Amino acid sequence: MMLTPPLTSCRPQRSTHRARLRALAVSSLAVFGMASIASCIDTTIPDLSRELGDGKTDGPFCSPDVLEFFPPQQLRVTVLDVGQGDAIWVQTPYFDDQEAESLNILIDAGPSGNVSGTGAGGAVVVDYLVTNGLQFGEALDALVISHAHEDHYGGVPAVVSAFDIERYVDPGFTGGSSGFAAARSAAVNDTNAIGGRSQFPAVPELTPQVYAPTDLFGPNVEATLLWGRDTPPNGASSSPSGTDINNTSVAFAIRWRGEQILLLADVENAVEQDFIVANDAGSIDLSSAVLKVAHHGSSSSSSREFLARVFPDRDSSHWAVISSGTKSFSGTTLPTEETLLNLAEFLEPNHTLSTQNRDEIKPAGTELGDDHIIITIDTDGVVQACYASSSG
View: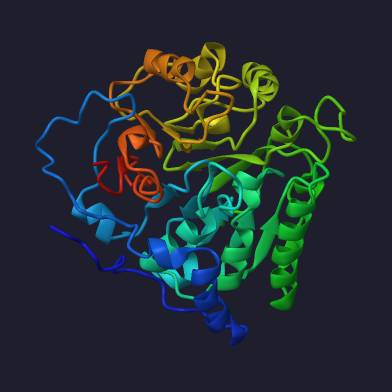
């Protein structure tokens, strides 16, 4: 059965602040390659009675109800399949009026597609959001760019051409990247045009310090800013390495109905070690139902010591989700075998999902935009995660 309608409880369009957005959004389809992926949201539902599979990241497929409906009092987090990169759509719970109460927050925008080994992630983001409820010219309540790497900020031009941005957040550190500075400028200009807020560096503009509560996700979701640095922790600000930039990432813990999701961007082992110390001192609580695995499943993150705090007991409600692609890093593709083995020690089978799922057996050019992952926490605290489309 093919499901083509968008979510039936989609919010109506908000006021379009600039009439040019519709024309720009349409033109951006060609500029960012969206026309070629307009049908990338494959919502074909396979026979759910079949085996989930024994692939490294095989898992359950979303039911038609999950794909069609965003019910009241549900927290919904969609990890979009932008290939090598990150883009996460958070839809916060509402009680009576979705338009008035629920927020749409985008954390990262995927790559531009102009870098070898990556695809037009920004186009995937816009296509998915429009297919599933938002309209061109509508406002995103917040756009967070976690750090100054292209596979996280490259899609910003496509996003700001399609939507207004009411609130913009980044760590404050540009890493010397002119591309990141340009993406920030585009987002800030969009925000300023509608009288929104730009908050960078995240500390102290969003919260006075790390491990502090934030109102970014609205009044219905408990949220903590776990990390965000305007300089790398080791002070290497003049000639930062990739690790230095990763370790400035804006990271969050969000909680609904007593269940927590960790959104860790690309932080690496040194930051995770700080999290362990803070957890053991009682400053934060890492124990969670869902972990958005840091740094695309690289071996530089997700140590057993860290995962033992995140998943202190083995439970069928616990999930790990990974955003990665087929790009080779000196012969290594993500997620790494080491990370998958570490996760397998703490999770039930078929409870580690990846946007890269089985991409290695798909024809080149067809692997993008087909393995979105939807995470839901319902009003009764039930946590689920599933693939929003068939993995072939």
